[in-house]
Amino acid sequence: MKKTILALVTCSVLSIASETTIDATMKLMQQGMNQINIGFMLNSKEDIKQGLSTLENANSIFTRVNVADFINSNKVTVAKNINENLAEDLTSLKKAVAASKYADATAEYAKVLNNCVACHTIVRGW
Image (cartoon, rainbow, N blue to C red):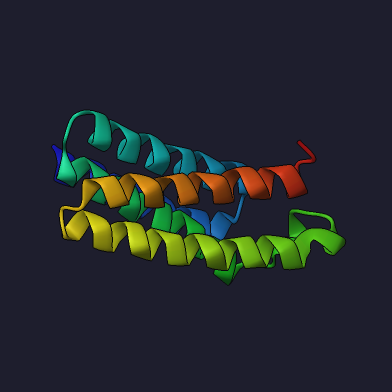
């Protein structure tokens, strides 16, 4: 069942890369964050890994599209920097999970969430 969900998410990410819609990408990012959170709450390393995969794939969309198509041009550099920070924090989270260092992983998850909030603050004017 989990492999089926992962396959569907992967297909969704690939189709979104061609659509390049911000709403669809944000929904994928939300799904990834939710899956990671569920993994922490249910002590499921597999759920965390699947959520990470979804988030990494969704975040990579922003490296393949022109972000200026979605946001005000003076905010593009900030969004790109946050995208890079998010990629690094996802890598750190993945390493912590792989090493079964869940206390460290939750700290890395907080950094990931902070990137989301920072982007929404800048881009959406929270």
